Length: 407
Image (cartoon, rainbow, N blue to C red; front, side, top):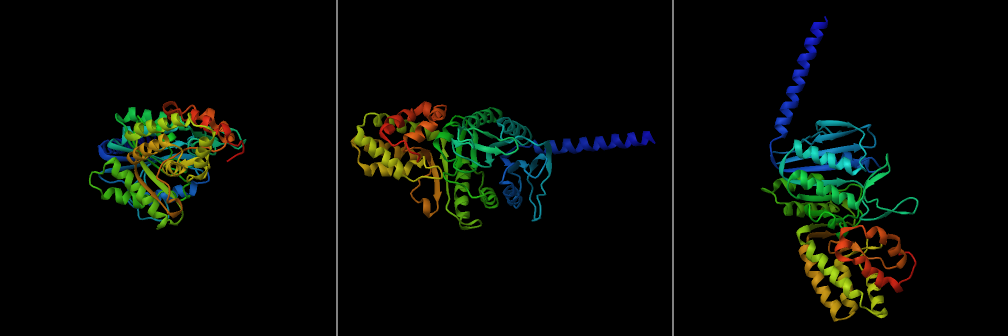
């Protein structure tokens, strides 16, 4: 009896190994693209994760595209890694679980690093798109205790952890090493992440960056439309994929599949960021030569520019339009021309609904009160954008006469 059981166990082990070998052999075939989604549903967005996965399953992985998801759900005790396959079952997610882990801390950057490394090893491709799915807050957030914390993306309610802007940049640098070249596209399916400060952290490790300047509705990206349009492209380039996400996201909220809501979305070419940063640095240096009357015009321009959920996050393009009208002096007008040109090269796609028609695609920190500046200035100094541009010093000079109230 025991021998028969042992024999059956041995046969089962051989079969299991054969399945693993077959799966690994299949997965090891290099495809054109691998789309990896770090889907953190360990919070109140959980139900939308299931919806988005079902959208992905309307297309599924193809001969040219792997869709690989690390799926954490608040309702589940484990975290699953899926190879998304096409399905017509509307009632549940049916894609195969390639690996199942104990509940993962999705607010730990090491979890992101591990997922990227595992995906690259098992689903090699010429191009990689990394999508961070969760809540986002740009480069700063005020915690529940009203203390400033670098609490920026991928909030995990089980651990109360999140991934900071600096950590996100470090993760993309690690991903580029694992891949062997820059991450082709990085995207935030999260609020408030189309900021130059966030993008600057990954300038040397990511080619194209996509995200929203404003809050994203809970439904997030329309993955069914995005993947269908992506697959319709022949040998899609990273720039083309970035433009597809930008177009389809906004269209879905402008009478499309997600109804009608005011949204923004844009795509950045990070190879053009150096020129943009140089133009901002030059503007900031000129700010530090202004008298009190001119400084007030700058502060008023900050206030008047298109803002978003956090009032100190302002659209750069609209700000320079307002600044141009303020007519500070000839030097500032010259910087406006330079920034507008650099922004036009940096932002390769920008799509907004009517409420945000003035937005040009890239947000930046522009507080208009000394209180807000002091609240966040020390954290800002940890960012690469500040190291390159010294924007914080320009703000400190301009805001020395500004009111100390919150804005």
